[in-house]
Amino acid sequence: MKDELFADLLASAEEMVAIEQGNSVPDDAAVHRYETLDVQAIREIAGKSRKEFAVIIGASYEAVKSWETGRRNPTGPTKKLLTLIKENPRKMTEILELETT
Image (cartoon, rainbow, N blue to C red; front, side):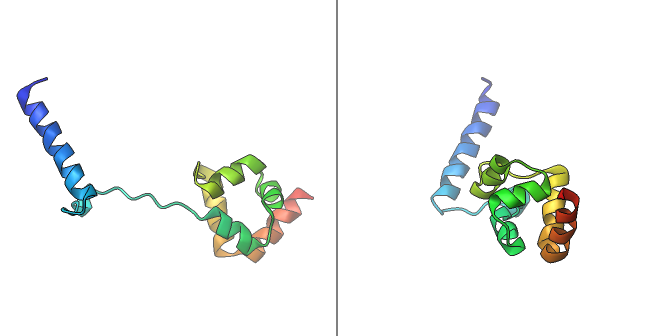
């Protein structure tokens, strides 16, 4: 490994340790934040069990469970649908229930 590359890697590792120990604060431009939906809260606001919620949004029970426990995050159209339910749970739930009957 070239000396310059190694020095950069070592400096990054030292910065990481300093941040982890609370001795340094990372630059906001270097911090990546990912917004995740609180699927359990959305489901509960809609007044549905996991099984009922899975049926009306067209997902599996296991997918809903994975989202709620943080093992996975909804993406794409599912994320959009959950956002719509979050914004207007009663109306969206009514519409989705019509589609499943």
